[in-house]
Each structure stands twice: as structure tokens, then as C-alpha cells.
Amino acid sequence: MASNKFSAGEIISVLSDQIRHFDRKVESREVGQVLEVGDGIARCYGLSGVMAGELVDFPEAGVKGLAFNLEESSVSIIILGDYLKVREGMEVRTSGELLSVPVGEAMIGRVVDPLGNPIDGKGPIVTSKRRLVESPAPGIVDRQPVKQPLQTGIKAIDSMTPIGRGQRELIIGDRKTGKTAIAIDTILNQKEENVICVYVACGQMEAKVAGLVEVLRQNGAMDYTIVVVASAADAAPLQYIAPYAGAAMAEYFMYEEGRDTLCVYDDLSKQAAAYRQLSLLVRRPPGREAYPGDVFYCHSRLLERSAKLAERWVLVPGEADSAKVEAHWGVNNEAGGKRGPGETGKVYIGPSGKEQAEHDIKNFPGCKLAKVIGTGGSMTALPIIETLEGEVSAYIPTNVISITDGQIYLQPDLKNAGVLPAVDVGISVSRVGGNAQIKAMKDKRVAGGLKLTLAQFRELEAFAQLGTELDPATQRQLDRGQRMVEILKQGQYKPMNVIDQVMIIYAGNSDAMDKVDRRKVKAWEDQFLKFMKEQKPAVRALLAKEKAITDEVGKQLDSAIAEFQTQFK
Image 1: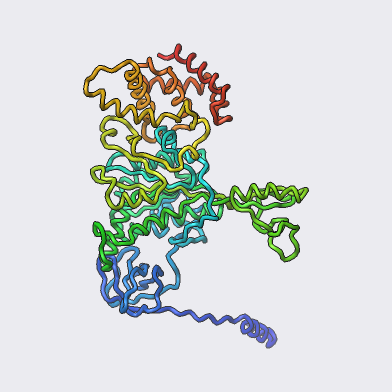
Image 2: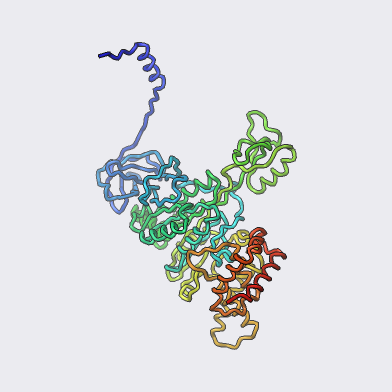
């Protein structure tokens, strides 16, 4: 047999190469011991250098934990996962990391737990990107005003309490009033809108969540949706971190790709209850209704992460590819002169920055204004809060109302009367308002006076029940109100295009429907929209193009409505 012979020179070169590239890393891990464990909380001794919110490892149990309370002689750790595996005397190690979740395109269409582990049986999620569960909200300079609508597809909301991209709109009401239905309809309506959706189910029944995922799948919405589930059967720590994990998954698309995202937190009253449970178990002092003193901060730091990020603009040479522009491409410096070697280019931030850039570009012939890629994304939040017996002035509801930019209040009496969605016009409000509507919807002939009309109608309705004689003008107002209520009724999982909404509300506000029997309003609406789609596509296309009720659009709509009246069966 031939023997393998190595030359001495080869061996020396390999050894010297190894020595040259030898990198001695010293890794230090603090190791402690579990003193006692119960109810998902482990009290540990020996982790004197652990950070608040640091991820710790129980190697023998194969679960992770989160340093929650740092006490003088011990650390209280909330166990993320099956806490029954952790026993007294077990070893616990610090990791030097904060809690993070996997993010990226691979998450879309998946159902995951709050740690980002898949629970839909479709195999592992392959992504190398991670993002911290807790991250600071963008500052004032990094934001811009909320102006672009986020269409929900629900007539009662898009017309009277509109939601803008980057807004936080609370959905509040008693059990079984249709809060989740509004959120799911909004997700279904994003199919054509290029919005990434994250639905966080916190403290819900697993059977209910499975049903919702199936609805999303059947309607093709899972193509742009991530579902994060911490069900009622899961431990309190997982229910507590679920909304933050969902926000982190959406933030990836907002910050890294400059896309618009929508987060639904269903629901935050259950998350607050989970946080109360954890706080009481680690002996934090109870406050009002036994909630800890920082429960407001718990919700505010979550909802403040929603924003419309400011777009960043730079002046670049005319031949530069606008789809790849980066912040350092600017041709001018901060002083306004031509950028020299070693200088950084000027970046213009937000709408006022864009105006300034349009002024400065005159000094740089042959250059153009371009948006920096990955800027201008948004995250819209729809937190859900469940009230008891309509008690809006309870602790958690008032907290979240004061953090959000408006609320959609759902009334059990309206639901029982068959008005769905059961939106109470009087209490519901959007603090962004008409800024988040297209011009056509804002028009006084469409949604302009709708809220006032309905609020007056509710008062007149109560008055009319007394059985008094009504004068013709009041009777007309009552009849118009009844028909508008019928128009605003909408089936579940049937979001409507905003152009169709404008046409039907316009028709309702004209005299066209006053003579239609109240019970036939729904049939009139269905047939009218079909008529506009099939027989008058040009009018619909003109309205979609203009996005406003111009004189020409108004004239064509009026004649189309008059023509349809003769055809209505």
C-alpha cells in the first residue's frame, strides 16, 4: 500500500495559518439556580448581572424565560412555554440577548406563536432576520401627518369614522357585538391595497381562531397576512408578549421595506388581565382594579409604535435608477453646495423637506428628486377592547381610549335590532377625520352631512315613539334616516370598494330612495351597483379616476340614478 506522505513545508504552512487566524473569544454566561417555581414564574438565585427583559435559558427543561422582576437577592423570571418542565434546583443561564422574533417575507401566510414558532403544521419558517419584540416608537421628526386612507370596506366606518394609514383606531364594545368581524373585514379589504396585515389573537378560544384563519384562507387574505396566536389555553407570559411580537413582525415591513402594514390586537383587555396576573404573582403592588401601576405604559408603548413614517428625499443625477436610491446618493451637501469628497449628501425629511428639495433642485440642473427606498412606510393599529355592560368608563377602556386616535363603538341594542355592523354614530369618532378620506367621500353630497343626519334621526326616532303627530318636514327627515340606516347595513365578510360606497351613499342622499319601500332598500342597492358595473362602467371609471364628485361626475351619476329608477323591479 502506498503511504500518504506530507511534506514538512505543507504542515508548517497549515499550522502557521491556523495560528494567524486564531481568534480567542471569551464567552461568559452567568449561571444560577431555580429556588421555586409555580404559575409560570420561576424565582432564581445567582443571576446578579442579568438585565431587565433579558432572555434566559433553562437548558435541562428546554424552555426560555424573560427576566421580569429584579429583586435584591433573587430574580423573578416569567417562563415562555411549558413551565411544568421547570423544577426547583434546575440550572438557569443568562443569554446576553433581549427577546426577539423571526421576521421577513417567510412569515407571510403563516400561523405562529408569540415566539415566532409555526403552529400551522406547514413546516419550519426559513428566515435569518430577527427583530426585537420591544423596540422604541419613532420620534416626531421621523413621522409625517396621517393623510392616506386605509379603506375598511365597511360603509358605516369609511364614511363616518375614517381610518388613515398610521392611525390607531380602537374597536370597543360588549361581547358578541361584532368587534372581530370589523377587523377581519378590514383585513379582507386590503387584497387590492398592498397592505401587509398582522392579526394577533390574544386570549381567544383556539376553535374561534381556527375558524377565522379558515375565513382568511378562503378569501385569499392569508397571501398578505401573518396570524400570531396566544390562545386562552396558553400561559399568561405568552398572552402578555403576543401583541409586541405582532408589532415587531409588522415593523420589519414598515422600516425595512417602506410598506404599509395593519395590526389587529384582539384583544387588549385579555392582554391586560394576563399582565395583571404576572404582576400579582411577582408581588408587584396592585393599583386600581388590582391592575399594576404601569398597565397604561404597557398599552401606550405598544400603540405608540404605530406611525406614518416620514418619506426621505435626495437630489440625484438624472440618469440614476429611482427604484434603488439610497440616502447617501445626494449630490448636494448640508450647506446647499455641491457635495465634495468625504462629505455626506443632504437628506430631506417629510413633506416640508420635499418642498425645500423642490426649491433647491433649481441650483442643480440635470438632477432629479427621488425618494429613498424603504422610507415612508406605515403601521396602522386596530386594538380591540371588550366592555362589560357597555361600561366605557372602566379602567382599561378609558386608558386605551386616551392612547388611540378615535374609537368605533359597537352597541348591543343596535345589533339586537338587526343593524349590522352595530356602529353607534354618536360615540364613535375618528380624530384624523376627513384627512383620511378621498375627496369624493368627503363631499357634502356623500358623507359630509351623513353623521349629523343619522345623529338627528336617532333623536327623532326616540321622539316619534311617543306617538305624537309629526309635521311633513320631520316625517321626511325620519324617512330619510331610516333609509340611510338600511343603506349602511352590510353583511359579514363582504367589504365594499370605496367607489361603490360613494355611489350608493350619494344615491341615498339624493331623493332617489325616498319613494323606495324601506324593506326593499337592500334589493335597490344590490341592483343599482350591478347596474352601474354592467351598464354604466364609464361613469364608475370616471369617478374612480377623479376620486371626487366634480360637476361632470355629479351630472352623470344623477342621470344614471334616474335611468335605473325606471328599471328597478
